[in-house]
Image (tube, rainbow, N blue to C red; front, top):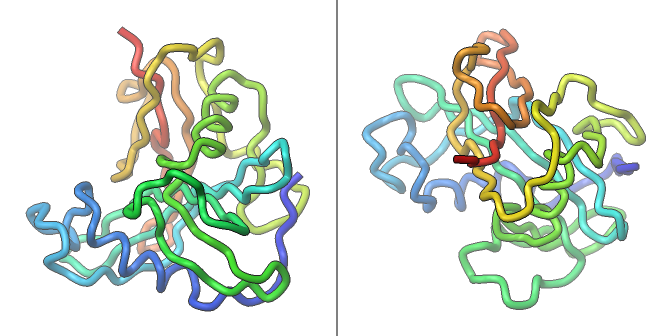
Amino acid sequence: MAEIHRTTLTPGKLELLTAWLSQQSWYLGGGGDGDAGAVTPELSRAGGFRLDDPEGEVGIEFAVVRDSAGPEPVAYLVPMAYRSAPLEGAPAEALIGTAEHGALGTRYLYDGEQDPVVTAQLRALLRGEVVPQAQSESDTVDPTVTVHGTGSVDGVPVELSRVLHPAGPDDEPRRHVAAGWTLADDTTVRGVFARALEG
């Protein structure tokens, strides 16, 4: 089960994500016309959950950050891998940044979509083989994360919802992971975080 350390991370996750997020092709430029990098993000935490690495080596967090830089806040899903050493063979753009953890030392934060441990555990979640954990509490299951249509995902592409939108039952794909996040007014909404792209 995930252990959450009550300590410092320098620089903090939001600081690292502010620099990294604006360089991503799916960043909407502060809610504007999709011109990535045109606006400096103004980020706050809005939700998320964790998954366990069976080997206990990689921290896995599916974080939701809210960007208030534009006329309308935008929620982004950023899965992250926390590693004690660089990920061999990873492209340079996969690295979100490095930080000093008060208990664990230097941590390398990677975009989870490009980290094999994160993608393997997401697939295990879609198969119903792992249990999502609370984002900020040790050894605590997060019952608000739901998996619909579990089963084999071998050979099936899995897509992340990088820009999150509230979804009703009619908007949900057959096989997906759904979870909640908070809006700027503290209202909680739910939507699809990841889906299996089946024909």
